Image 1 (cartoon, rainbow, N blue to C red):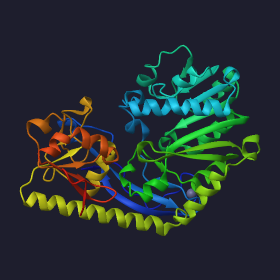
Image 2: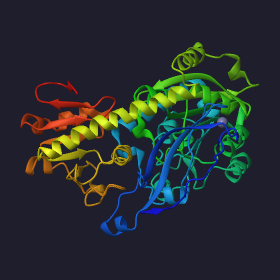
Image 3: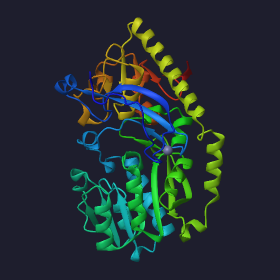
Image 4: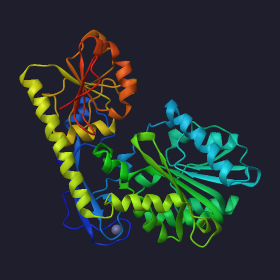
Length: 427
Ligand code: ZN
């Protein structure tokens, strides 16, 4: 094992710059969750510390040892449009934000991290005059090829903001989906967004929601690609530093729980009408203790308890000579596997529906990834369902496996055993 970054004694908050960080959870030295490996690559795989901390000063939750984005996103082959539920999500999204905030025939919309145009295309379909996408992933933006969409194949920083202002003027709407989780220089990015936004412009920011992670024990959302985790409390503190504020919020069920923040200039017309939903969510967050370090300490204890239950079960099955495999070789699965210490002695292999992953090994644990055809050919006795947020979809797909006496283990939010025809047994 090669340690890329030895732990450092002191970290500063990436948001407020203060030194009030409290360690929440240490997931150990792990292989990068998004990387799938050949046998040769596995032999020289690097490991990185994965620790998350909470800032008592500004409530921001963050990975304390960020990995260079050039390493993290060097093989970025995530095409949003390939996922049907995501495509439908973005069509609804475009319809809502255009109808609510824009006069399409005069409007300019900028999306930061536009991926393959999954949102910009339906925004252009709404008749929006100027549609601009900024994204550094060349192979992904090259797939857009839509004359209605102007692409800046670049990181969103001062240079891209200058160019937008020079060529199109300030924006009526800026959109960022999941970007706020990924971008290391969060203050620099937010400052540039504030720069290009009109006085009555709206910044729509969607990102996975910390409240759901804590409440649902979704520690599998933690990996190096996800640098930052937001509550509304933290989001407001961060935006205030850039003259921005949140005037509305909307919970989004996608990815196990995201939040859409509607943001305007603090001194602009959007902030004169703040939805009661904002105050309600703030009250919920205070009641849930998202502004207290002890809440996160309890989260870490609860997560450790789930790990112990899961590992006791896997060890028991191993002692009984049962054959066990995993389902869903995602980044989320890799966090569970590496944190729990699951290895080839517990799981024979992983199954994934994406053919691009077949024949590769999972990071850290080096489990072979196979297609779900194996369930019919040579089924294991048990399947650990790592893609547990898609339980219904996968249980339906695996019905013959369950009908044939196969059993499923759901790892979160509580470890439970599923067998046909019993819907679920608590452990
Ligand atoms: Zn802070």
